[in-house]
Length: 87
Image 1: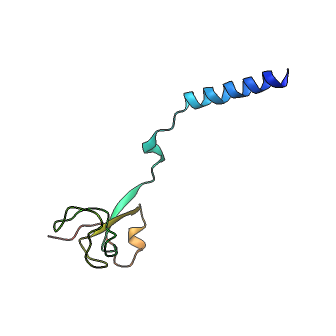
Image 2: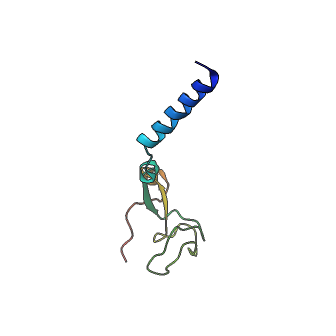
Image 3: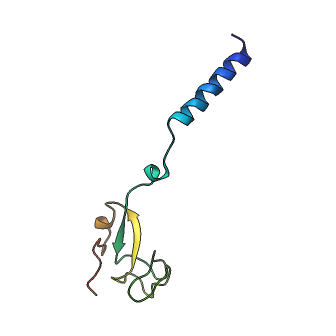
């Protein structure tokens, strides 16, 4: 077998493997959770009852502000809660 033939066979096998086993974007995303009470001022991820946009937390560690963290991390953060505060 010549080098050219071997290289062609290898490229064909790699291409076939890529087509047979597609990677889905949602499979690659790690699990996350909302963590309330740990966002720094201006670093929250999304809106709350008092505003509708990210990056609008007025103070550090406000109970109603949240950030997305890897699943399981919130319980390890001081002041973190996966439960939204009562309105």
